[in-house]
Length: 378
Image: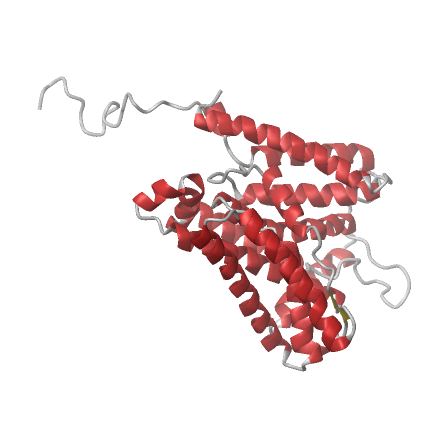
């Protein structure tokens, strides 16, 4: 070896003049979560000033907007992973209503054990998700069109079946049918109740001062809605950032043809992602029907757009290949805080859509700038 050659592992061993160094600020600017982080800071600052003394940030207030945010998070996880894979699913909202009615029909109307009704519903919904994905990858049709068709198909069945069988579109009795059921419990149980009793007894959170619940904490536990949201966000984040399958998802959305050339099973990845959105929608439906004790055919309307908006606010590109589950979770948090914050601030609730539009526009502009940084476009 020449005396002038760098030693193995030395400062020049891994240098490559073809690789451009990226500064710390630039690395931070291209992170998908940036838009969500900026949005969360702006929203919390705004409502901290406007509604800081309204109870919005009390334990009960936090639980209120926390549950709203958790709803969006559950469906945003599936929507985010599918968008990273380069596809959309506009049937999510209809899937929520369909899954709820399915549980009610099997478990209440037809008298099956609730755990069987839940499993059948998951099987049906996952199959529909697989059909969505299969049609998209086999025909080459835009997922926007395919899932838009299923939006109407599912909503139609959701109204037709209970109306035909029961002559109604709202089915109650779910709470009674699910009593003591082991699977229903994981969708309708408050956790860590002892912790909130202790917090109430020590004056850290408020307790009821009158009535039959006098002395009990105003929060009975952590709702399973929030637990499911956290679990799905963590699992989705790990899959996207720590697994080979996560790399396949990014590759399928970034450049599907190039991904195929290097052995990525693009079609299978996309079908699994459609099934993931169906799974998240069904989880949402299960939590919802057991919370309300009923299923209604009109549940889930517009949820597909809210999920996509949360993902876009969280930094995902509409073109695919770029996004973050954590960013989508931040977008969902913005949703919940704004929706409940307007109530606490005593602002006309219709302005929620205005705030949402402003945040979405800001997020799209920021994401476009980020895309140009990544691709080098001018």
